Structure formats: structure tokens, C-alpha cells
Length: 166
Image (cartoon, rainbow, N blue to C red):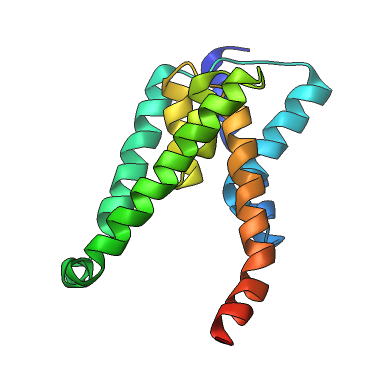
């Protein structure tokens, strides 16, 4: 099968998996559902088709459109109010990610790019795209973020309740 037909097969399977992941209310269900469906398909069917590089470009454009479209002018007013806490949060989170990346690399667990993208705060889809574009391992980056998202979702109600009681 040509890579064009393979891409169509991946798109069909991905849409099916994304729909199921969303319906099952899995965190990041469309992303995780599409990914797992294609992985299972490849494992059982023992097939592999290359995805054209232009496909990654299209994904990045769509992600950029989604982020740009979510911008609201009122956001600039809110940003003035929270700029210092946002900057502090970013520095602490990115700094922590850098430290963890060095530790994980020194322990021989993963390469530095995968470790940094895996421990970086941010949107799972954007960081996976960065992993695809770099020498990092996208599946491992996904694992880091998927587990983080599930952990946050599972612990957020309890933590919110504890913090709200103060």
C-alpha cells in the first residue's frame, strides 16, 4: 500500500479512535483514542506506513489556528493583573523541567530532548508536535504528559477542596 493510502487508513482509524476516546471521556480523549487505535492496529496488522513530513506542517498550522482563534482581547487586561504570578510560575515550572530532564538523562532513562519535552509544562499536543520535529521520542513525551494529565484530573478535586477550606 502506498504512503498516501496508508495516511488515509491512519486518518480513518484516528478519527474512529478519537471519537471513541472522546465518547469514553478519556482525558485528551481525541488525541489518546486516535493514538491508541493506530498503535493497536499496527501491532495486530504488522504494518507501517510513513506519514509525509507535510502532514506535520499541516498539524502545526491547525494547532496555531486553534491557539490564535482562542485569543480574546479581554485577555490582555487579565494578563496585566496576573503577569508577575504567570512569569514566576513559568520560570519555576520550566526550571523544574530542566532539572528533571538533566536528572533523567544522567540516570540513563531517556535522552535530554525527550526528558525536557516530557517534563515541560504545556499542551500535550503542542509538545508532541515539537517531539516529532526534533530528535525526541514522541511516544515517551506522550506518556509523560498523559500520566501527568490523568494525575492532575484525579487529584484536582481533592486538592481544590483542601485549598478552598483555607
